[in-house]
Image (cartoon, rainbow, N blue to C red):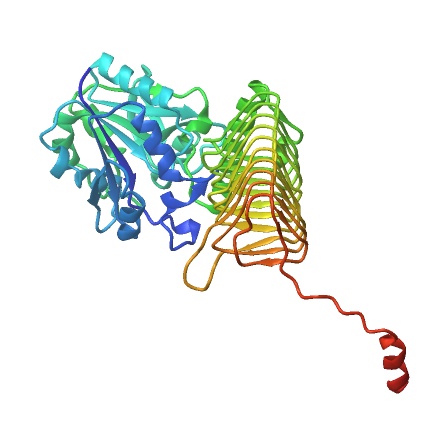
Length: 462
């Protein structure tokens, strides 16, 4: 197979998006548009990947800093042919196939790209165009064919005659080019059109006049080549991506009570026999185990959830790990770094941050545990907090196996509660509690006899 070099066009502003953010950095189901394109290209294992940037170039550089891609600047942005010319500095001496993609076409499957490149290479074509037949071709370049069915040229919507606008076969903007003849042909592209720009589709007519072989590959699902130019189209494509993910999960044995109101991003993994209720959000690299139940209003981001976990309504889990058989919520909040071990219970309005919560332990109500290590079989009473921050440094709290923390207790870190120790309700613990001991730290109670009657007698009415 010839070397494959991918070029992604991402220099445009996306005027109809009405945004300071480059169009290709707007998100579809949790990922930037260009990330979908780059992932599909990565699957082909190209020899190189080049991204053409222009509008908000520094923002693009920052967004792509972690990727193994070369960046070239198109300035000014005067057409797609002009954009490809900017890559000659990197690819001018290369041989093989150039696969040209648009950074705003996120639904294009890697299978389709493989099919395009294979057909191009096997035919020995100078250029191969990916096309589709659609019901409403408005806005797309039309594929004009000869009487024998060969592609003759591509005409843009603004420059098309009424007869050409009636053509339903459209240009996807995705091409495969044989590299050696490309650069010389690009010099012949002229800006003789309504926009005064250098259009890449003009290459097809140039190739035909030079008797270079040009062919087409048609996609079976026209949605694949759908580009995004507005917020409306962004929302519509997002809905398609979510629907595809929902169908994939349901086919694998996951129950979605109401798929239309379930938001699950593409990288999420969910085990069979898990039930997901309406208005659940599963985001990022989240992994959900088997036979779980996730109730309405919950949001889980970049977290790992074990088997047989119940997550009650309106619980938030971010960058955390939850072991098998755990019950969370309702209204629980696991902040980044929480690690809840098997069989534990985190209940109503309990918040964990950077805390290991041991096997079979319980914190059922109204507690905050931050920078803590909680052992197995611990009971944390309602209203308990770890006072982990002194205004400068975060300090750890350690609660050993079998300890019992009474309600409305404050554990002032750094502090340790020993194995099987008790903390009396209402205590402010500032020193370690030894194993098996009772820690109590509260003021002595005084009762003043007849205080209420005397108070009322001395207070004027009205």
